[in-house]
Amino acid sequence: MTMTDPKTALQPVDRVEPRTRLKWLRDMMLIREFELRTMQAYQEAKIGGFCHVYIGQEACAVGCIAAANPDDPVITAYRDHGHALARGMEPRYAMAEMFGKSGGCAKGKGGSMHFFDQRTHFYGGHAIVGGQTPLGVGLAFATRYENEVLEQGAKRITLCFLGDGALNQGALHEAMNLASVLELPCLFIVENNRYSMGTAIERGTAMAHDLSTKAAAYGMPYYQADGMDVCAVYNVMKRVIDRARAEQAPAFVEIKTYRYKGHSMSDPQKYRSKDEVAEYEANDPIRRLADALIASGDLDEKAFRALSQSVRDEVRDAIAWAEQSPEPDPAADLYRDVVREPFGPYGPTTPPEMCGHEPGAVAEE
Ligand SMILES: Cc1ncc(C[n+]2csc(CCOP(=O)(O)OP(=O)(O)O)c2C)c(N)n1
Ligand SMILES: [Mg+2]
Image (tube, rainbow, N blue to C red; front, side, top):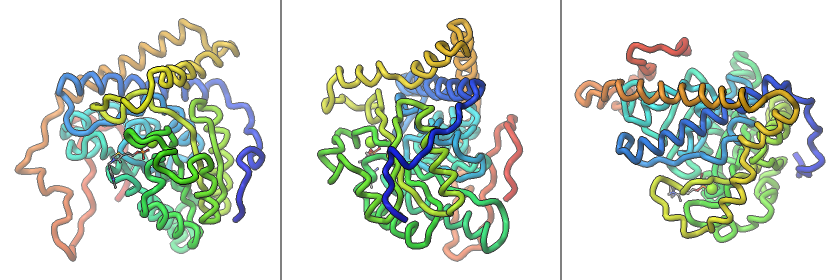
């Protein structure tokens, strides 16, 4: 594999159908509304523990996941609500997890940072910075092994998202090395939002101005996308994914993005100016796509308002559902789905019970 010029390596993708771009708009709006309500519920002490919102970064998850197949594994860090929803996790299922209720995707035992949904091939939600990257390589190994050795399943690729803060974790470098040596179809997708907690990337990361050097160290092609534009993300990712799927090889993608809110719910944000935040907000990916659809005649303000209302209704319903979902039962649930015996026997994880609500068929174990 050789170094790739991110500007010339990718041909433009054909114009995407307006109907598809309207779906992306709704997906981004759903994530935004879900998280605004999450912040409110957190302030009302209905949600506990750590909570990191993705507001501003929605185009990354939506654009990348739109370019993948539904059975391509997705894995990410703790800022995971957007990826799970973009992947199709039911908002009820996601909100109940935020509330720590037994109807949540991890039965209320994971919370905000540990979403998981096997049926949509969403493998978490991981709180250790960079910890998901060796797991992403393991998923890529599994899909390649299934396809080539067991002759089961199509060629798949793994979307392994990470923050810019994970660039300096040893685990990432071991993972990238292995993916390259074994030629595993793992896409390392860096959501470069410029900060790792309060540390600006150039303060903590060598060669921050040119992350292609990270890819070059492991012989991987490097690509770059504007994360404030969902169509641009899709355009890049469609080509990257098609190529990685065909070649069954890794790649490294940098998506330039920005988070509007603090790192977590308690962040005085002394490390950046209000003007900087306002500059990015003025280039908001949701407004940008809505304006483009209005300009092309595929959306009008009335339809946009109706879309906003439907998203608000869906999230309100998710909150109502989460509120009435039962608390986990400590006596019955504490050791459920926990591997206790060091040498087995291991049983399969039991699928979450939706407490009377079943959003779709549960994947076969
Ligand atoms: C191994 C490890 N070290 C430190 C932390 C504490 N920590 C939590 S989030 C975070 C910042 C990570 O930033 P980045 O990867 O850029 O992701 P972002 O929050 O910007 O999405 C740190 C240092 C941790 N969770 N894991
Ligand atoms: Mg970051």
